[in-house]
Length: 299
Image 1 (cartoon, helix red, strand yellow):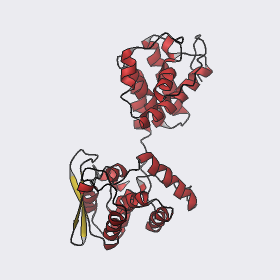
Image 2 (cartoon, rainbow, N blue to C red; image 1 turned 60 degrees about the horizontal axis):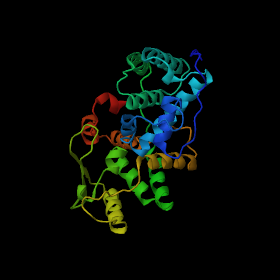
Image 3 (cartoon, one colour; image 1 turned 90 degrees about the vertical axis):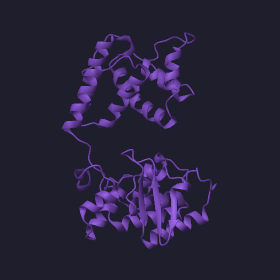
Image 4 (tube, one colour; image 1 turned 180 degrees about the horizontal axis):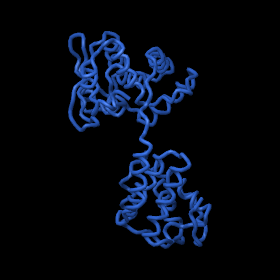
């Protein structure tokens, strides 16, 4: 690695709280015990959700390991040198075909703890990387595989997961849209179920009408057998996005399709592909799936 510095090697201490680990990773654990931390830094760290803390921690650990290998402590460097150092680190990641997402998480975490530093050069290199290597769209999967995964989730006593995958496939929902549904958002009609989406990617309140008999019966059966609190404001699903993603990977392994990089978005794309195969016009698929662009739907 081209990163060089004469600073002493950074050593991390294991502390029980994630935000304390985050702090140590970011600042290189250069402070002595009992020296105290900035109240502002502590306050900024409390704004992070637990899931965000975990992602930031993993990304920053990678950064810390790379710097540790060269004896570099980021906090010991002037802000301008930090910026150029991070830019060089990101460039090497691009040249070595690393995953771009982790580098963005690391920059975001550093900006969170120290918002005064802009890291303009590092962010610019990160943006250029994105233009040269845009993220690939999640692949679609055969409807037979999607159906098998939905049924398998139910047999494995994961009814929430099963319905989430069903809604994403049949209703072209994004996983986060499905997980955000409350009981008040599900309106049962005559031979149909209407989903009122209040948390869409475009920030608009939209509706999705399900008319497929099997899908409608699946939703009604779930609501009857797993009523939960049945509070109108309560969410239908208690599971989180991370759990859905992990189970998608587990089910992929179960069916021996690990060579197909399925993700949570694959259900939505597979549903769109199936509609296209059945002869539904692209314009109708775009409207039903609420895609922001025709290019995103075609890829």
